[in-house]
Length: 120
Length: 109
Image (tube, rainbow over the protein chains, first blue to last red):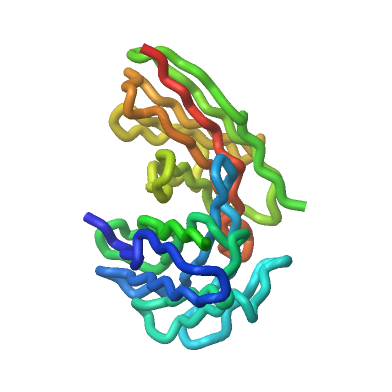
């Protein structure tokens, strides 16, 4: 079954509004969460890495004031796209990393199902 | 710099075998992952190799040679549902995943 949930799965918003995307690890404590963006027919692009209780580390070229990340607990991280514009329309995917007894692996990344954002 | 290379696209026939190669140059190595990603969906885990050799899991096998900086994913008895992108990713010395661009696999009947 799914180990990482993401909500909403898709969202349409108007230009200038903000959108919040939630990512939850369901059966393990995610010490680290990652946020990716993927444009059609392109590879995953890491936006930021966040560790529980500390500020996110953003990749070069990603505006931290536009893409607000909060990792307040070991099971929840949120990404808020502020003042969204049409060029922000993309597939946003979170992934979580932490030790799961069932796999015995600490560094595998479990992906959420993704959120398709369309800004009109 | 860090670099992961894999073919952009491959085509194979249903029922056949296909091998997807991945070469890497990274700062440190703590394992290599293969993920499958269907169009419009998030990646799903296929395999993890940290030691040299072949890991077999059903129709899928993954091979690693650390000295050569090389891995391959072998898919047997191909099915139409195997049409997807296959992503190679290396865990570097900082335990960060470095992603390849993915190989789009097209299966023909």
